[in-house]
Length: 136
Image: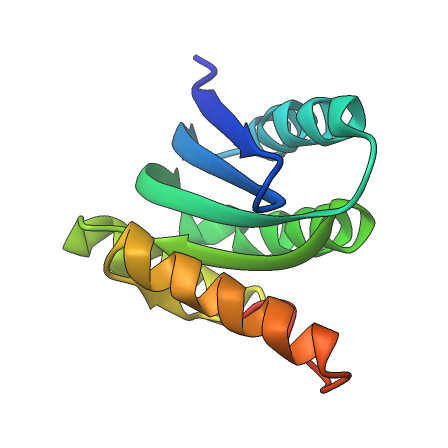
């Protein structure tokens, strides 16, 4: 059964805020999940920063490599930077473990405010010409 993703775009900040509600077990789950993201980003029509709430995201270990491939490609196509956060320790642990297995940045912050501060830092580094990390 597919999940859903809730999006809210703040054009003033250039940040998409997302809430993931999905259990990803198969390649089809990965494809369906990222299809939601691609459709949303295509409607915006430009690259943006994103703060993702992953409290209700479950990525099973057996699909982590494929998830990582598709996540990295999607981020490359649509994002200037990404910061993830969760107040749910189980979600943080599973997504962090999956991220490591998929060779993605494992940093997941404990609050939305903390994640927004990371995005603000990325923007500042980019404006100053520093090599800003795209996924801190």
